[in-house]
Length: 193
Image 1 (cartoon, rainbow, N blue to C red):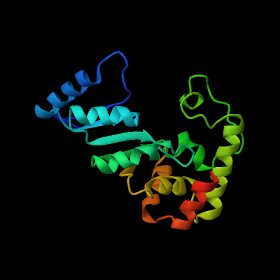
Image 2: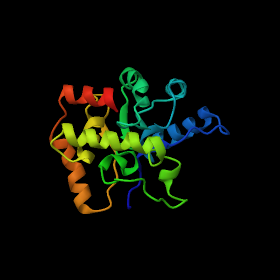
Image 3: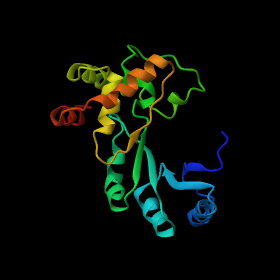
């Protein structure tokens, strides 16, 4: 990449075999050496985040957050308390909130959606379809745009991470930032999905 540093160095999953302090002290060393600019934590619990900020300055959190998986809201008070950026990943829940699936897809055994995003089978698929349909009904936009916009509608969310397989999808998804859900739409989605 021809860069001499990383913007954000994430500790992507808590490691039960390595003390958190050991990892964060090394990350802080990288920061002091100019190898990284910011330290981020991904998929961390409230308790582990509180432990981490006692060890070093944490700049960013990255956790899954979508219409179908909203438990990251419990981290929002820490985002404010410690002045953290929050990067929401999985805002399309592995693509299911795009509205493109009309029936359960047949996924390869190695497809991450089989074990990471759990909305592709059975009752979870039905719930995801209902959410995608609600997004279509209440928003004058694509379900993908509305799902991205939903994540961005929370003041604690700094950015939304989404995937795209084509330039058309990328352009359409990026257009989610050009408008905002009304408070009523957001409330309706929170209560019904």
